[in-house]
Length: 206
Image (cartoon, rainbow, N blue to C red):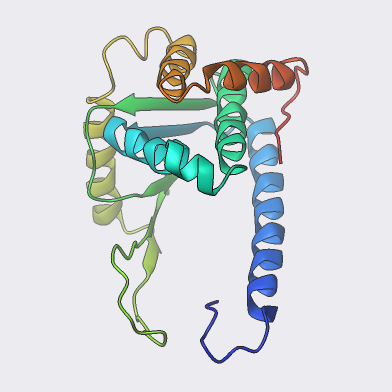
């Protein structure tokens, strides 16, 4: 939902934030259920995209303008890293030297009927508050389309940083600690991670 110029208050924004919060709670609940059921999640992250993301949210200028954002970003990565350390066979996040054109998810990839979800991305905004689009993403189980995305996933696996798989999950911990050190936030990441690791069960900062 957008905040159109003729709004007299922030009711739409409040509704959007409330709805987003409830959706995230539901997704978190489903994620916990899937982890408990033993469902594996493999994530492939472009090294340069990660660097750009952290620079955008943790740069000195951003931290001065949004002082709370750095802690939110640290907690987000501490959540993922704690899950990787506790359940490395369930949650596997790999850094790769490759940037795919598509951001996609293959659900039940090893089953007899996998599905592909592709959330389309709009990269540029123009001054049109009422812009509408017929296509914003898709989900399909069509065999030939799924196979194309499986081939793309295989190329991602082939681009994982050397030694990352063999030393996982500690390779992920070492890598993230190194990149956060560039922003003088490695100590905070370790502190937040240690809190999560005190409990052997799946726990997250929310």
